[in-house]
Length: 241
Ligand SMILES: O=C(O)CCC(=O)C(=O)O
Image (cartoon, rainbow, N blue to C red):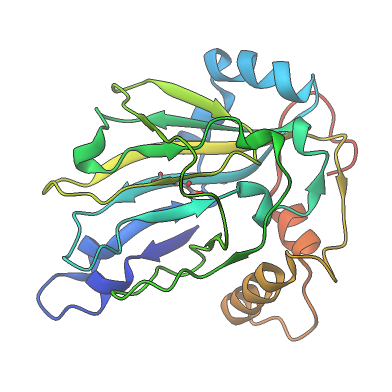
């Protein structure tokens, strides 16, 4: 599992390291956490998007910490497809479940309705004064006048969304750690694509660098290698992914 830390809190001399944890990524080998991905009440909706062959591609336990005053607890507006080297997008869906009441005070999800019908945009690190967390890329240009919807959710509420939907989340202005659990599912019939020469080249370079550093791999690593390694079957047959 990959433990992610908030850039501002991790640098603070006053807070213990544990207080900086923003996310645990890739919990697919943890049986207890992975039970979430198998919940029939989630999978029955996922199947409407993916069909019967279902892979869990990306698993996250999200723990948005109280903001340390630098606004780094915000998650920039982005499209999840930026991170994924598999298609078609319509056969990918995210399930995101609130583990407590989540509203604007602790940094709820913010979405731009209808943007799932647009194309994949160029993503980069936003130029935020207080710093940006590792891998938190944002859409470079989007129309700021597009209407936003703040998703206020009760504990156990789940939202299912398309990987092209532009979304992010606000600052956590409360003293608590805002908790959610999520899984990106895809049909195992999806196909990997080569992202060289596309807007996703920057994320491939960054993720490959992290993978090489963490696992001491000397050779070239592609986004496809990384996702093939992370992917886990939830239902049906593992055909392509
Ligand atoms: O839970 C959040 O605050 C947003 C998470 C998210 O959009 C992501 O990790 O891609």
